Image (cartoon, rainbow, N blue to C red; front, top):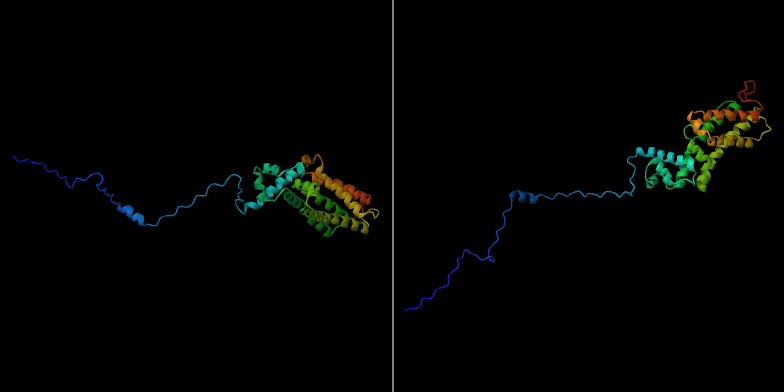
Length: 268
């Protein structure tokens, strides 16, 4: 009896082991393929927000002059109330409700702020005085008009005038030289009118024009520091009433008669 041996079973070619099984790739989407050929769009870089302590420039050029005036007004208010050495740039910033660092868009330092305020405080005084001196008229009326014009700025910028008169001593030498030159030009206008009045016989020649000028300006420049300045200035009467009183004293002393005396010789 012959021995039957079993042949090994052949595995099917279609059945593959897990290692040899081919992984089929997914078909590409036609739309995705078309989009892949299009150039990629660059996304705009998003800038991170500026830190809180970084300064921002003024919003517009039109708003800048007004903002500069606001800064100067606040500086004048603080310097007039506290004095230059008693004030700080933080005090100015507090008046405006802004950060202290934002002030430096408009002035470099507290010293620079004082210079700006003093320049604004002195603005217009010499120009007005010069026009009065050069205009026709009697010496008595000219002197009275000079006094009135000198006090007129108290009605709308009293803080500037106070800072100019009292705090300009703290300016740098160069800035003070410029401001003091302006003050001397104003003094010259007063002195010229007084000297002319003496030469014409309207004022007594016994007086010294320079000393008379300094005496009158000392009275006039004291008015902004009167204790009742705020109360009177609110009614709009301080400058006019003070000018009238000082003119009466000055002209009465120079002529020996009241300045409103129509019988006096005022044609010269």
